Image 1: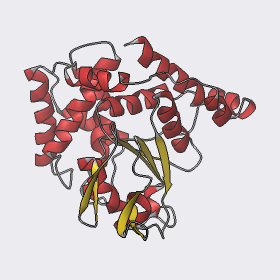
Image 2: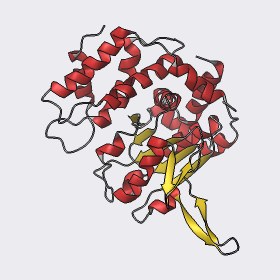
Image 3: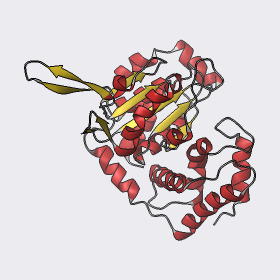
Image 4: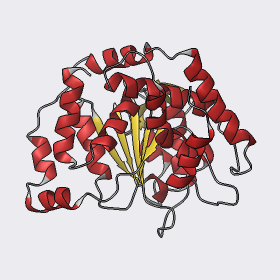
Length: 305
């Protein structure tokens, strides 16, 4: 791993105590040019993680607080008639940033949620018949509360599929939580933390990640996983080809963070839960997501090359 990326992980680890694997998965997601969904209870550090990554990577950052009355124009922007110029002028919304935090995305209506779909997939938005490109790089980090909480609207499968990874932060360990309780405010600490990755370095690393080698045997392994989910009666739907691409993209980024230029089976296994759990449903389950036991059984069912 490069010294710059190691610095990002170490600096983020000082803000989010005891969550190095979460930080590493999040960074791998961004290096793989993917969007990240963080699902967990309020107050465990979802927003802090997004803000920390934006700061350390030197990205222009905007936060959109999703609420039940949010409109698509509140996200994309709006055209306003300029009397002096006698024409409509488009005023960009907060989606025009390099890293957009869609906070509590499942508290907005499906209409507002869908306003992000084109932006996430095409890196552009269309309004009033005009197409506007978004900055590069462009990432969406969305947070959502568990679906059983009051006032939430479940994300449709089509939108869940746009997220390369979904992670959970979880409660901190006792030692880390004690340090958090008696230590400095994390936001103040972040303000004093210098940017760890500047300029075009992120784009350079993304190019390097895309060149990480994946052997034929690993592609077969990935296809075996996809085929198993499609043929098994344990799952309502099988994994799509897009899910296979997400697995390989995430595995390349994980291998790169491990300092290798080729993917090993362990890299694929490390990112598999984050890349497929939100894309699978067990038969008879109305909620997106799988338990750890189901994911362990999936890995055990596929021979490792």
